[in-house]
Image (cartoon, rainbow, N blue to C red):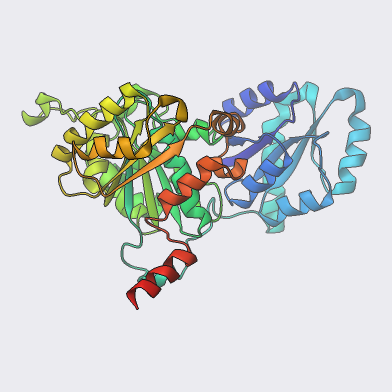
Length: 416
């Protein structure tokens, strides 16, 4: 299967190209890139083999084409019929030799296959979809043992921002050079793939569950991940909520156990902690077993709640319920979308939450609707949108697991 990146730069041919490639049995679209920088960053992740791009892509030059080829990605351009010959000449100058007529997009899969076949003949095609993990793990930990912690991100109903916090935390840990795996284990439908601009047709979680059944997950584990950078990979979730039953009991635990050998693991979970009574009678697994399994396998839990009255009420009650499911796991409470218009201080909220159940830390994330919307529309993480009060607050949360040099130095000074 040939993995393809697409950047259309607003071209009218994009919809048809995605349809044609989607119906092809030889290719799969990994991501729709918004512009050339996004394409170059995605190519550097080491997963794709072909980039289908608009002949008029802004910034396309010999340096960009060389960047693609250096990472094993071979360009195929799409040009309009009115200037096809001129486009061919210009593209050949920057190193793009495969051009498809916009009016003949049905030939696009053949062009994609041909460029890969030619590259394999020349001996420069990519052999693996993901780069191998680093030989030496960080912090001097042994390569054959668990090297990271499993951090489950959970929260009550009402969309308090679990997925956003999970993706932002994973991106921040990766920015600090910690190998991180972001896992979407929400049984009510995965959202991380869409949030991060991953248009993969195959769910990473469902693929992993199938490899668990066949006993091949360990050797196939790299194939269920999608890299977003040198230190961050993603296992996408359920494409439709009703497919939760395809993830058999024990699959989530095995996925997390393998993922933690690569580094830290951040798991986005569902909201419900209810158990179906049929489970006690030996019936089929329950829908919420994905969430319950992730919590049971986690080393620490980040509990996300809203800062408004309804969100705080749900958060307080859910902390009591969570303690019944995970009585000894350290809890880190995150109050999301904190804003001055609510009329109470962080100290007031922290005191209220302490009255329900003890947590190890309480963090507050400011409301930044503009920054969040910008990241969602672009299909990127919050960090890629630039520094803001929200990203700094997420950085403060990440200090728990990946303290900066300044904090480590301060800690040593206090011990002395």
